[in-house]
Length: 221
Image 1 (cartoon, helix red, strand yellow):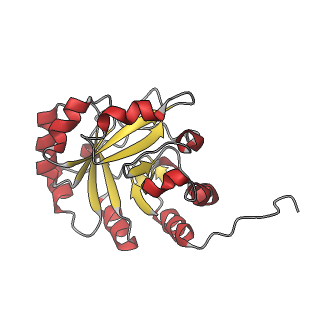
Image 2 (image 1 turned 45 degrees about the vertical axis):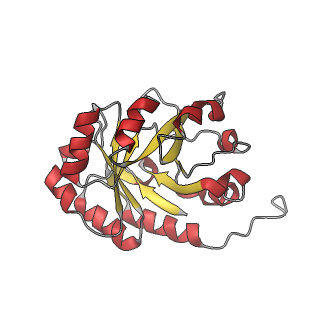
């Protein structure tokens, strides 16, 4: 599984993740976030980051012109729209750069209804947990909400994924819906402080995620 590490605030940690083979680095451009990247890294520093890791900008209901200006100033490869952006808004941004549209899910949501108007205007989807705050609340939603849905679009699975979720992720990977699973998104469960990642924990998680999975056939024995 591909991995996106979100909420990065330290350029050296981005370089370490690149060396580990992490595919996506998320930078939060939402000023109310405790991981707001401009508190610790200017645009010039972000733009200079090189490597195979893909730089993803996280935005929440941002003015589209300001968003596109940030894309250029920081040399972003993708943008993640984590607010209430309309299909029309997404279309404008998608004409310039590839986008991931985030859908925050609660227990009674109809996933097919939420995503239906975004197929033509988003390159990928992300499913996260409904939270009073934008940007994620560090909690998991019920992945069964996705079980019988035909996503038909590459998607990221997000929302409070932690080091102890390896088995659950590998079970989910066997579900029919997972044919469209593009990557998983990790954040707060791998931190020592907001924006400061535990690199060794991520390294171990990545290794364990790639290992063969042998489910317990007789869990009560």
